[in-house]
Length: 285
Image (cartoon, rainbow, N blue to C red; front, side):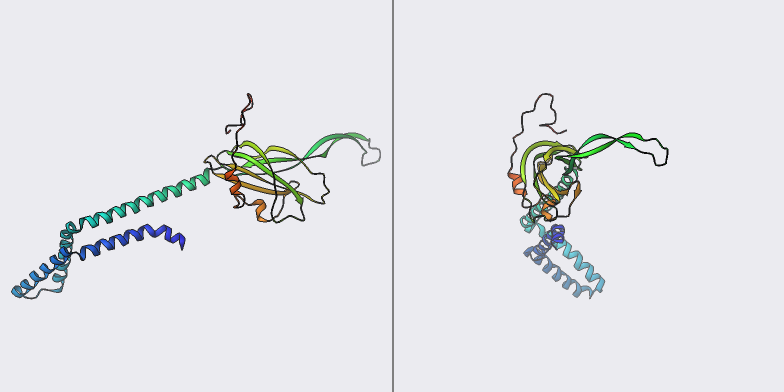
């Protein structure tokens, strides 16, 4: 109902203004006087020439109404000017609303969409093994096989699947049991200024030390605060067990949640001085 009202109210307002104008003309003294003269002339003509047909009377009445309306415009010119001004204002407001809607749509289409995640970092080592043949008489061979061991760090990465760069201000991280996820996440925030180029996925952002507490199934959750090129603040989160996403309450993965947006809007970042030979710190890629 609200959508219908927003879409059709300008047309309803213009129709209402037109009805007011017609009513003002038809009830004006000049129009009533003109119609009275017509009725008197028609009565005198009928006495002289006799009654006319219905079609003739209808045509004469319509023509007289149009003629009297045109002649009455001068009498209410000020009022009609006011209605015309209101109609122009409504038309201008409608154009402004359409342009604003198109601009908002363009911002949604063209803005950055930053998200993230990551995976535990593994260290690759190579070990030498003796492999015996499967059949009698086969010679035993020595092979070198890769072995992956955890480093105790989690590689935090970011993605930007939008069309323009996103300016990252800070990220928050937390840990919990994968089988006992709290209803509301509590993050440990770190100020970090960076740019996420458009169309880039899984770009390394930071290595985070995995806690040494005993967890049967350790889960990491995080959130990024950033803004798009239009200056609009955003917030996006994730939750994973290892490198696999987890099903969790809405606050963990909700984009631009109402409970976090006030923090994003009031947070002001002071850009660091850019060092020579270190591009990308203060300017978008």
